[in-house]
Length: 252
Ligand SMILES: Nc1ncnc2c1ncn2[C@@H]1O[C@H](COP(=O)(O)OP(=O)(O)O)[C@@H](O)[C@H]1O
Image (cartoon, rainbow, N blue to C red):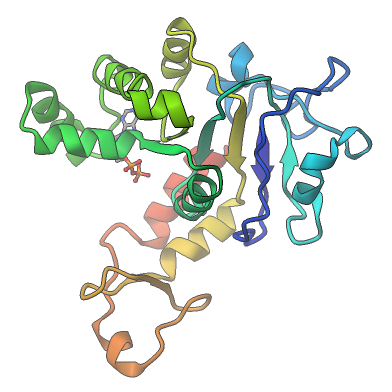
């Protein structure tokens, strides 16, 4: 597992080669001494947190600990022939950016649970209709629907040949258990560990250019000119109140 802290660590500094040299002497990560904040993951063996102390760091992971990525550290990994990665992080934690960098660098198939569900809705299947009802209310879709979709996608020839980056699954204890039951185990688990106040600041300053689809941030990535600035819109749920709620749910 590799966690990324509060830094705006968006450079392609991540190194995710499957690690075959981690020894049993690795200790529980100090930040996760007990099953919080990701109890559903930490209570399942494939996701058990293991920290890699800097003096044990294999050279291939050293980059993660560079000054550019002060809060990045490997906390779990396992041997694997194909690279299989799971990534987790709150909205606005930078997951989209990291997914792009990782899939580009390692040639993995990016499998997003949200995208799979949207495709199911677009196909107008019975499962899609049911999923839509939950998604419209901002609730998790029942796992019987999601687990099967994720499993099938992971077993597709492209995922099997190129390896995969699973994004947005598991999100609960029962989902983690379902992956285990299917015998699906990641080599690396990445948790984007961003503090609540930074998540809120990112969400509240986020703006969309409806013309190009580009996302800006009023402070960190402002529009280049007044014309773009004048047409920027804000997602209805990108409010401080909503952001606090979501951030608290992900970081508590
Ligand atoms: N693992 C999952 N289990 C159940 N429902 C999910 C899962 N992943 C995504 N969803 C559903 O799809 C919706 C959109 O997910 P996603 O695209 O990841 O966006 P967000 O990051 O805003 O949740 C979620 O609000 C939820 O309803």
